[in-house]
Length: 181
Figure: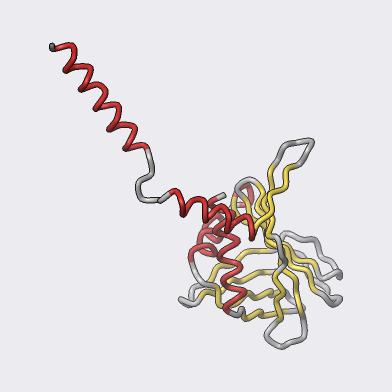
């Protein structure tokens, strides 16, 4: 009789442990919806030789600077634990090495990062954050707060891009998919 009660107790304990391991606060349907939503926003690319996986935004975001003189395409990429924001001017522009990129948020806070591109007159500016590049706090801030604008500041040139609601949402959604994919 004692043996039966101990077996029932062991089964009950195993059941309780199993139930506690299942995420109870996330319904399975929302996880599936999240994966479907992210598959519409992000492409997964795997290097056939190294097996390294990159996540890339499916679409570039067009950004017009405040003065209307420069239009940029922004591409977002996640490689391992780092995030790269790649900006390409649609008109010729010289971008200095170590141009300061300032992200200004709706709560009036700012995050500053230096670009990682070489000086060029092709209008290319890249910002690497997180992972081996450090600045993980900037990635966290970008993914949890609403951006107001992005500024590029060098000794010669400066551009300010005021973001509209659609652009802000696309940036947040893409970063959200990068972090939770």
